[in-house]
Length: 161
Length: 221
Image (cartoon, rainbow over all chains, first blue to last red; front, top):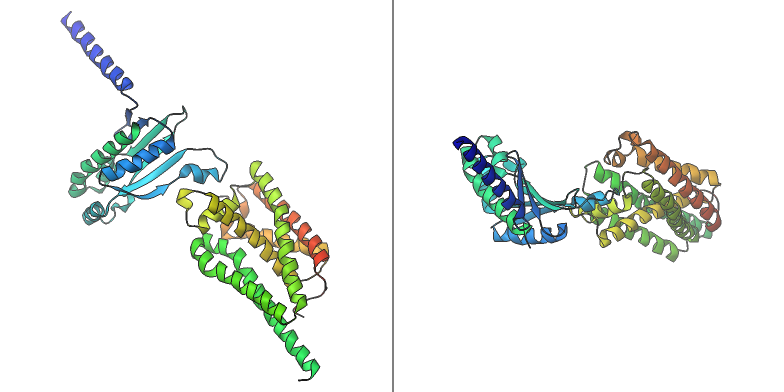
């Protein structure tokens, strides 16, 4: 009987947690495994991209490059809404490359804003801590959570209007 | 100076101007494949090679007019005009082919983003204008090459010339870089589109060149 009650309460807590997540205003985060992070955002792709660029500078990074896959694929006749931003800063770059000269395959970190099949605008990125693990460098492992936090803060700020 | 010596000097000068015009006109169409082969960026080539080649062509036109080389002036203008109009015909086929799945993408738009070095950002109104202008300039310069080199020839010559241009495009690294394989063998309808488009180009070029070029014969002879 006691076991049944605790099972029920655990179920209720889980349901409440799921419900609160789904009702969180405009922000729905979903991690596919540990690597891919997806955050549902409010507004169109261009609106979210605009907010994202502002959030980038507020989090001590800069947009080092921008890739508009939607427009590029538009040249082939495909209709896609997708923009990628490459984020970093010189100081961070110096430290990362000092730790491993081959880190350029993972940085500047990339964040993507796109319209999914259901018409939702989504912000996605690969968690730097998971990507940088591949280098086996204690220095990079130490710096990676800071990048995780920055990307999380940027995605959260850009997701809500 | 005796008149036949003056005439000989003038002909030599006209031949020299013709060779410079041919070289300058041949620059533009080669830049795309050079860039796609990885030798240089199209944006750099556009500024440092294409623009000077246009200036050289304009200078040849002015010099030929000043020196009374009316035959060359006529061929430069007739060739450019015929090539330009023929490109409209080529575009009609290419655009239709693109919408029917016979082309991997919009070539003028691609040229525009490459020329303005904004591939990552995709096309803009300005890049589209630049890309279309470059595409039509290529058509005009092929017309100049045809008119200066061959002059008023039967239609079959223009058709053969245009198909050579089309085949040259298909075998160039530019096509392979589009992801359709060597000679566009992975996209057979592209071959059809290119051949048809250049057939129309050749027809229009040949008809207009016969109408607009005053003298037959080889200019370089």
